[in-house]
Each structure stands twice: as structure tokens, then as C-alpha cells.
Image (cartoon, rainbow, N blue to C red):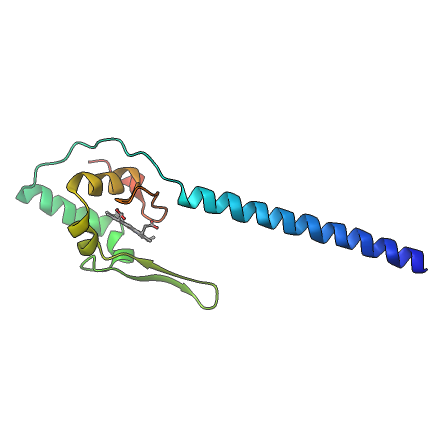
Length: 129
Ligand code: HEC
């Protein structure tokens, strides 16, 4: 009986170790992917004229940008699961003051933020103008 218990203990110990190793691997692999720097390709900018501004306003509404970034793109909390996760979308007027037009176009069209990291949350591929 004692022998069976000891072996059960060994097996459970090994299983626990494997689960911990798998969790550590997933943690390292996902943090590497999330923090990976990406190289953005140059984007062709559209002219800053009344028609494009109106089209941009229309796209903001039809592509759900305001759902996360807020009505005036001032940023807001867009997801909250108590005790699990709270996600905020940044204030885009703040981002626009710090990023160039080229960087903003790359963020929107390629999903590469102005600091060079990947944006995971915005539906970037939907916008091709
Ligand atoms: C699901 C929520 C969500 C939606 C919808 C969304 N965004 Fe975002 N956006 C975010 C979050 C969160 C960030 C912060 C970076 C990240 O983690 O993706 C962000 C970052 C940005 C940035 C800043 C990138 C940088 O340079 O740091 C821009 C510009 C942007 N979004 C534009 C848009 C546009 C345009 C749309 C509509 C097509 C849109 N977003 C829709 C959540 C969202």
C-alpha cells in the first residue's frame, strides 16, 4: 500500500512539473510575441482636405473605432471582467500629438503603433483607403 502511494506521489509530482513547465513556456512565448517590435512599411498619405476628413469621421463610426476609443476618440475603458481583466483604449488626440501622420497611418493600416510595437486590439485590416 505504501509503495502504491509513493508511486502515485511521484506520478503526480511529475505531472505537476510538466504543467508548470508548459505554463512557463506559454508565458514566455506569449510575452515575446506581444512585445515583439515590428518594422512598418511606408504608407501613402491621403490629402488633408474636407472630403477626406468627412470620410475619416464616417469610417470612425462605421468601423467601431468609437466603441473602444470613445465618441471623441478621447480614450476609455472598453472591457471589464471583474477580477480578471480591464482594458483601456488610448486617447487618440494624445497619440496624434506625439505621432507623425505617417506613424498614424501605419498604426491604422498595418497595426504597428508609433512606438514600434504591434497593436492587437484595433480592427486594422478593415481599413484600406
Ligand atoms: C476592440 C477595441 C478597439 C477598437 C474597435 C479600435 N481600437 Fe484602436 N486601440 C485599441 C487599443 C487597446 C489600443 C492600444 C494598442 C493596442 O494594444 O492595440 C489602440 C490603439 C490605437 C491607435 C494608436 C496606435 C499607436 O500608435 O500607439 C490608433 C491610431 C488606433 N487605435 C486607431 C483605431 C481606429 C482608426 C479604429 C477603427 C478602425 C480603432 N482604433 C478601433 C482598441 C481598439
